[in-house]
Image 1 (tube, rainbow, N blue to C red):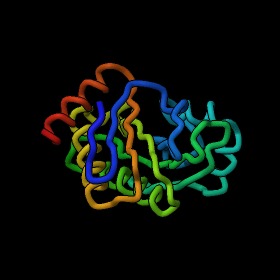
Image 2 (cartoon, rainbow, N blue to C red):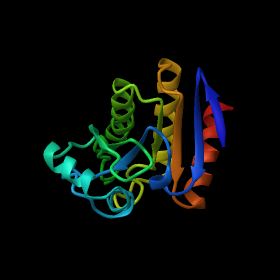
Image 3 (cartoon, rainbow, N blue to C red):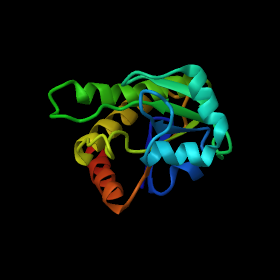
Image 4 (cartoon, rainbow, N blue to C red):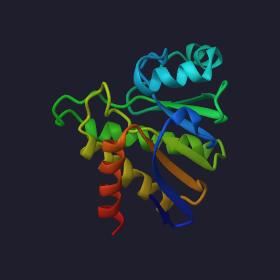
Amino acid sequence: MEVNINKGTLSLEEGDITKQETDAIVNAANKTLRGGGGVDGAIHRAGGPKILEECIRIGGCDTGEAVITSGGDLRAKYVIHTVGPVYRDGLRNEAKLLENAYTNSLKLASSKGLKSIAFPSISTGAYGYPLEEAAEIALKTAIHYLREHTDIDLIRFVLFGEKALNSYEKKLRQLTG
């Protein structure tokens, strides 16, 4: 599914984020940036040791913030590492922290002159964020960014599994009419 917003495109697809040819892919990282499970582990495995070496030099990343490394052996030139919130009960600023993870990743991409970026569904795996709520935050943030900025041409969400894709498609239809 694809929609045009301002001068940019927001697209949704099911797939493997490590195979994207966008300027950057986003890693749903942990605070140590040392790799882990899910998307984080897949990106570190596919990207090779150079990404981990750069992450070690950076030292870490706080929840809601974003940092950038090269893409190592990936097709993407860069990996933007962001830390989403662990979902507890929705009453501990989780929504704002998740929004910040997306916004700060987009701002970092813009500051580096990148034109295309691919996101996973941040925090919806091991961090337990409810998929429908996370999809709404992710998509609203991306739509708002494309409406306010013309420097990024493509924001793609690369979703793991049909359930995630369907949730994002349903929410995108609701948000864009």
